[in-house]
Image (cartoon, rainbow, N blue to C red):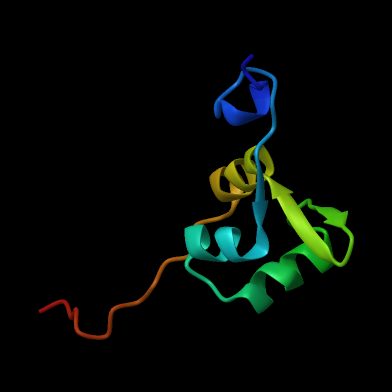
Length: 78
């Protein structure tokens, strides 16, 4: 007998990420992820004393976040 929970990628099933997993994907600290969760910028679900972030919420946040232009001081127009 197969358990559907053991099969990732099931249609209609939401994958939840830990704060550490979200921080790794975004390449930021866990504290930054907690700030985004507490401010409401990134939706999450509280499970006991920890948070989980739906994969689609993270994908949406990353897709709709405004890109920030980083100035490179080494580039100079001649």
